[in-house]
Length: 186
Image (cartoon, rainbow, N blue to C red):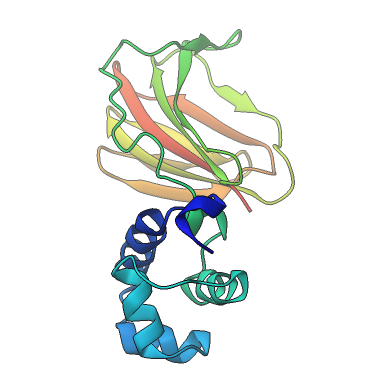
């Protein structure tokens, strides 16, 4: 593969370094696990060499990332949504609003939401797709959250992970309650 074949070597080099550091692995360990020479990996991380598709697939498997993460340029690396400025959607059954802060890019399996709620009624959610897990961190206030059959009371800073593919609920117990939810699609 050469720079004119579609995936510039600089993008591959940066991606390999980024993903290797993210995984906390040494150059030698990644090379060993991928079944390539350490010198080959060193050259690729330096932006030189001629990686084959097989080498890149072996590296993506070893680093536990999609192949595309090694050959596509990074997308928006910084996204800012100021408090109260993102579009939000209100519940029809409770004083509860959700704003999508970040949709997972193609191939990703997560979405990030900001929840604002006031104590009045319980917001009940029908089961989402099979395998969905929700991760919630309460920012302010207090809330009753989780599976409809066994919700948990949370305070600021508390984290709760629960299956999103069963009926679940969110009930603010204090004015000005906020939370961040990551919806993970397994």
